[in-house]
Image (cartoon, rainbow, N blue to C red; front, side, top):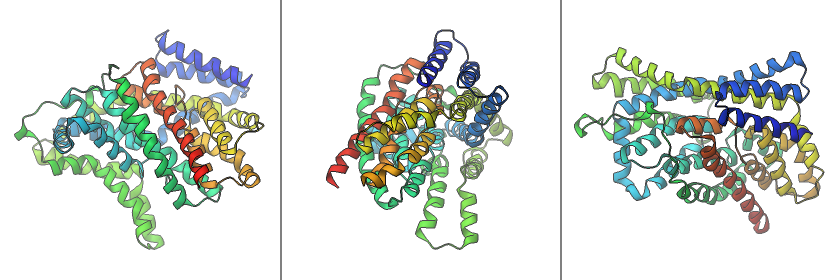
Length: 437
């Protein structure tokens, strides 16, 4: 019955958005309330779940997305994006630009949360797309595949790190095994699969379309790169410092403060305001006007992402993830496959990779001792499963859809398929490593 309710709600959500042409914001709110009623959440608690889901989702993303949009808009309007695109084309050539983006996505994806990396890299993707008239999904999906794989497979991201601790795994070995799995997963789901998506017509957000400037009007390559990538540099430095040096408790607190993505974005925006704005002759009023336009462009995206969080919270509060995991735990199959399957089903139903991973961990933890499964591979199996079949109840799905301005059908064909390929390749890799190790 539980599965039927989820299927009914998701089917209604898709129909409301695609067939009835209802705003995704309104559709999510309506379906969240209906799901809460059908799943037995008390009447007086349903709106609390909806509000908590919106608040929790936007609370962690709104500052980052808003500041990231401002930075992206300034990078585009100042000509820095055009300069970066030209630099990349000169360095790697038009033929290999996708591989350059993949490597960039993989490097920055290790220390960054997926949402942060997405917001920071989308302007770079769009600058290449607009400058060289290339298909947006074909160019952008490989980089986003790299970001997604690092988020699901590799510490220090929340779910893999928590699973390492819970399973008493070796974080170093898990990271090494994860890197081994990440390479084929990214290549197959990114550059190879995206070759089938060249005909998808996408009209990315106009806010990131850079004006065409002459070469003498462009900022320098170093200034452009540092201004655009400063958030990545700061986050990488603050992440690595505790591992490279023995820091006192006070210094660790300072580093932790400056490692917060919101602080990083504020610092980066302040620097870019000077290097790409004031220093290049723009008044503060002109720069603030650019920022205001950027926020207008992403306002509806924020509301849609928040409403997707409402549905996720309703499903979580209903206890449905525990019910699903308990039912699947009765299956007698290989533990690594079982862990992947449980994580995948919870991910499909609830929408959150982190919730899917942590819920699955509590269910399969006893199996590791009973079956003598490799805990490092168990972490990776669950991580892979937690990425499977991202769809309309996942905020990542809507980030991709709205930024690239796609239909639901094309988003499923590109984003959902990419995430599922990553999950399947990850499972296959885990099973191969289990035979070898």
